[in-house]
Length: 211
Image (cartoon, rainbow, N blue to C red; front, side, top):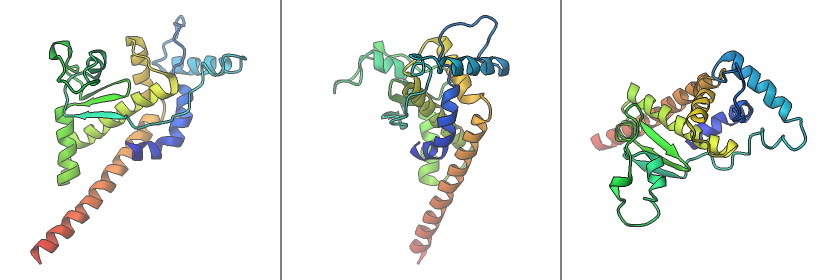
């Protein structure tokens, strides 16, 4: 995730100003559309020029882009793990207080914690340790990047977990302008670079074994 951030940092610093900081509803303006996001951008840009409001509608500096706690192979929702205080002690959590991730989710993030689903984790292990390239591996990388962007969103704007806020945040991450395409390019390059290096190491090990 650090490598992804390092490549994306200039783009993210620019794109962070497009984040939907405004929580207020604007009549007839939908942030999740081309015209709506342009209206949001103009309004937020003007608000930043008003004394006392610049900080409120500007992104905070990204201090730590990598999610601090990652739980591999965990299908519980990160939100339930946080709310149940399941990770604060050494005792086993009360499973009756935990919830599952959504059926269409491959991971879940909440306040510095990512629960990485079993299928996603298995795809990563197959690639990172056995060099298996597949669509599921790239999908797993996309999942990691998406949860990292949720964490970065917390860094630049503070935690915002209402349904409407999350919906706008997803649009900012996955559909706003050229940023999603730039992210895919970075993921593909890093994927091929890693698998290429791993293949050389595995090939060298195999050659030494035969010798």
